[in-house]
Image (cartoon, rainbow, N blue to C red; front, side, top):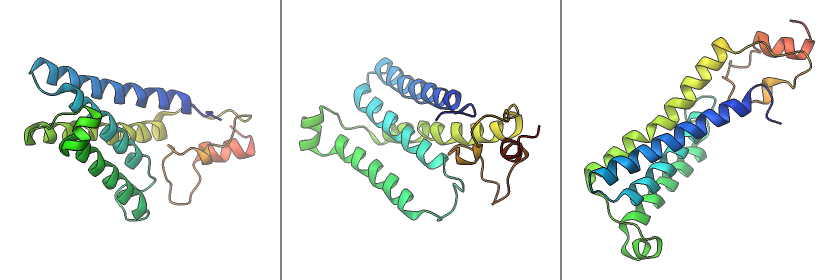
Length: 160
């Protein structure tokens, strides 16, 4: 199920998301900011960045519903930080505009990590053994515009 080195890639992204989120929280705590609210937003927004980054064509309108869903999710997260009733329920604190901008900027790390991982995987991944599952179903594999990579062909034909 997590063949073709997918589990390593998932683990790498998990480390990036955790490190980014905790880094924001530690920075906010050290500067006396609302670290829990910043952690909440950073964690969720970094994951949304990963969701956008795993798309096969990330800068297109090919799947507008994913764009609307991620924008809506980010908007709801921001509401959880700024609407008084939600602040009380979730125990969040309002962020200043620079704090919100900082969290938003840092959260792009999730998107960038997936895109860099995709490029690195496409260029330097070890060959797929003939008995491993086909990598064509790998959601993190780069899109080749309908063409199969040599790795995908060797996985299908059994040739090196």
